[in-house]
Image (cartoon, rainbow, N blue to C red; front, side, top):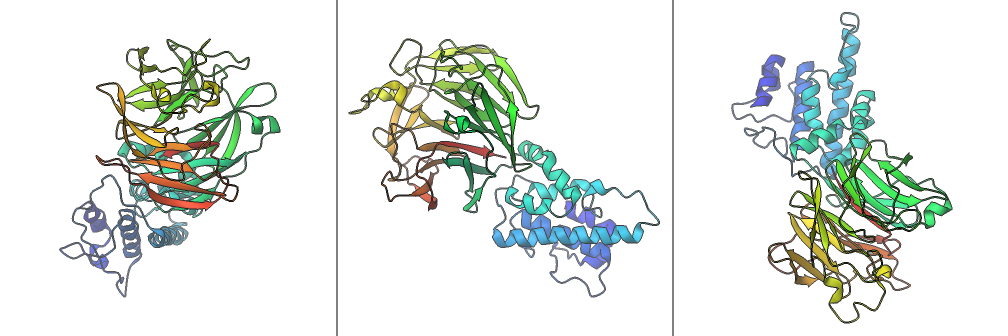
Length: 456
């Protein structure tokens, strides 16, 4: 109904809206400029909601969008925006002498800024690069981050997978369109290239932590500008830590400092402000641990402690309201199971491979190629099935196990000399055993150095 409200002031008779709100593909022979504006706006809105122009739009009210544009619809929608932009420029030229105060910030001037933004919120983030190229107004909006903040408030989220199979080279994968993308190359020295690196995605940023000659450093990739920058530092420089993100915030906990001391400290990062806040320290220092958000709290699990060559089986939970950590005994005793599980020393094993989907915690137990689910009530792990066939690793290293929206994903490839490809498999957890679906495969290094999933 809100479309009809917009249409009436702009010459409703020329738009040819019927009682059923069906819109003709063909504009009136003597169409006025207003008709074009409404027609194009309607096309963009329809495509952004995953509908075709002739479908019933009686319930066109804004809602969370789960249907995103396919490749053909993308081109049509972006072309609509382009045509709207041209209409706006033509209209502005004609009105320039009589109205020199036209507001360029309205984007599509004839339908107003609010409706323009609403159109863009429901477009796929894959389209934002093309839309930003239309003119300066669109580009400024895309790069400001406003669209992503509004999408987060409305619950509109698309998850992309970012991973590195070659040092200093990062790629992205869009699981909705099965599209692979190369990120710009990182500009760093050889010391950083060869150092231990951790990564996390938070807000619209991908953070990569490493070490240069004399200090730890963080490289930040922004999807708003499609570029890398450096210079950010945590309050306590660290590596080999556990981390997790939720929306625009992330927490890093534990790890090692530049002298190799194992840390118990933790910090919270806010991507909106670009600041780090020191949190209360954990009960136990640990490195090579993993972090996840579960039940609205941050969990740190596993790792290696001070003066202990074995993997820590306890976990710790950070409560934001109480601003305190609580230890959970025997939260991850998985490494003690299975033949050969303890052959390698603890410091040679990867941190626990964990992921949270629909507020349930899962683990990839690489020693037995199994998928486990955590029973929160009984504090134990249950085997629910197998990992994909190509999910091979070296003591857990080189394999990525992540949550991607409502799906679990596994990224990896064969260790064979001629097996130079990478696979991304997904499964949406149900009551049954995992049934993995191949999302994509490409020629690449098969060892995953770092991986993060960004939802925005």
